[in-house]
Length: 281
Length: 294
Image 1 (cartoon, rainbow over the protein chains, first blue to last red):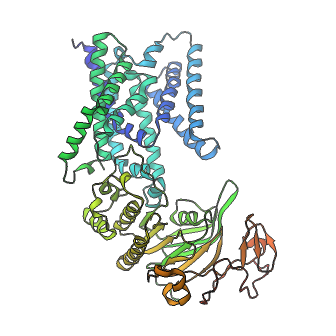
Image 2 (cartoon, each protein chain N blue to C red):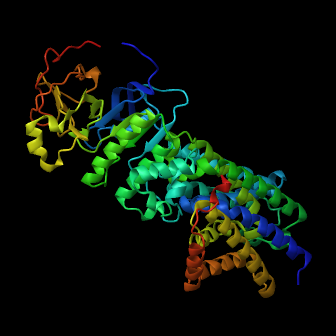
Image 3 (cartoon, rainbow over the protein chains, first blue to last red):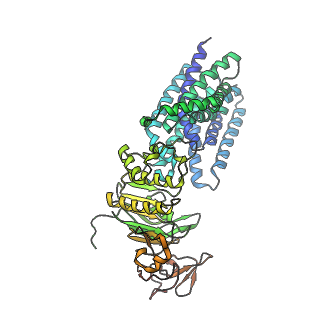
């Protein structure tokens, strides 16, 4: 049965998946999975700060994510530590700070499980509006920086030499990431956001012959995972976030199976003429 | 000297350091429209770094680097690895940084002889095919300046000749300047106007000698004689010793070649006698031994 909260959850989830797919492709291409993890762990600090200053949670998480991204950029330029060590440092310090801050706020009674694994019951109409407005804004900006960002993904030096300003594109990309993390918390939870970025993109890889196509397929795979995951969550009373990720994993395995190979071959043989994939740029 | 228009790029005493070590220092380099400049030097001599300073990818830590306003660059980097997670066909790769029509892409791919690979995934190309694809991509941009970092690596001998001819052809057609980094210390592209030998600094520079112009080279090269190739004769007034120090013509040994250490390291002349190989050392250093000017 489609209860009202369930429709809201589906709507919000579809909005998140629509954006997470294309951004997730860049996470996969650039091997930034750990960066996604770092931002989502830092989200907990954002939640704590939201309670402390009584501001909107999404907004606080966004602000903290952006700050973590900027700190990373700065540290990469200055420090002698490697990127993954820096990410680990930022990720777990933010997580620990968030947990400690929450422990101090004894008056706050919050559902930590809901925060970690997502909570469909908590999705309000405002949340849906925020997710879709933010999501569309993210997609528009991503389309605008698509060419330089993709060029920088293939080769930062080449992009720099040929006036693509990769630094600018990278900075914008990090802000987009922060936005998506902030949007996704209620749907899949802090621990599993990276999965929503990576698994649909990995699923899409098998069928895509171009980067733009992969972005579209990843969005579709993510949306399918949302519907499947939430349906089964309702049916078997399982937590929403993990159910969505399990559904995404099932789709991935399906894509890797012989059936997926057959579909991929079919798709490839159907497009012989040069395709109109460049519309995103 | 007349100066019809400003150079495409010019470096003045440019240098770059990384972690307290100078990768390259005191490089003067200008490239004008229609000019082909070849950089040679051993591994780690700062060839790629110099090219990157010229391109603006690396900001010089000393000296200056100027680029002409609105300079359109076509760059073939030394290394480019495409992750297997990235679905990238040659067709898509051709318009990576934009501004390339399908027609221009097709034409450029035809010129490098790989137009049949248009629909192939880049990561499935062989080393030589990928080099051709990168050159085609840079060419299709119709650049003012073509910067090629070892463009013939992984290409067989006949392919190397063909690519050199093609680079010359591109220069003749669109009149761009070319900065070419050669993997070979002695054999360079014959159409090169100027060779600059680097080893942390400019060791010497001059023009190459056509292989076919001397009997000795013809014997040395055997069936490798081709008008597209030429030999560059190094004339050094100093020798780089294995421990990184430098022995100068006057017999003194210093830590580096930088002019501040009191040795003049520039040598603009060259002679055509097919003498023995490079680094023959302190051959002609007339009066350049030790003047502490500067």
